Image (tube, rainbow, N blue to C red; front, side):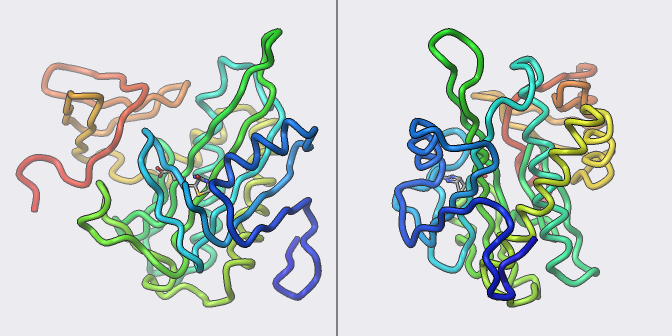
Length: 257
Ligand code: BTN
């Protein structure tokens, strides 16, 4: 798989110079009958979005990619997909930066290099009127050439070039991400969540260490002990075990820095 050689990529690709959001284009392509596995990229996005409705800066030189997926699992297992995707992105990133760099997955689906965020994942979907999932947009943003400043984001960011990444251009990052996405998706379909959970825990940021999580207006601190079988974060807090299904991991616990 790959197009950095000048060959067309070995996967269906719609590459746009500019879009509102590649996830929005997935919705439009899905309505037109777009097939499972279609990859959509945009050099820039005017309305790139991140988790919890946050803005995602989308300058030229970074990767903005969405994959259209048709139902991959029962709706009860939808919480597993973010980990499949994060693992794929982390593996792609690790292959592009010097081995001395620590590439880690931050719960639930961010990718960090040396404690700074290099990539984020936004998964959106729509149901069929008669029930069941119609389509899933797996949106991935990788800071390749540029990263937002520390005062612009809730978690400090970095980019591949700042981390000494190979400078082969955005298309080669895209090919690497898609390649790993195909690989981990197949592994998930064939082996279920267990191998994904194991591999994700193997590269998890701060596993066994103190972690602070924001859940709505609440802030919870504790030792990051495990991931449950649905992907919830398990924290050993002063009040006992807390199982956190959704939230934002913060850069520091109280008293740090
Ligand atoms: C996050 O970390 O908050 C998720 C960021 C996801 C950004 C990507 S860029 C491609 C796709 N299109 C979007 O509008 N968002 C995702």
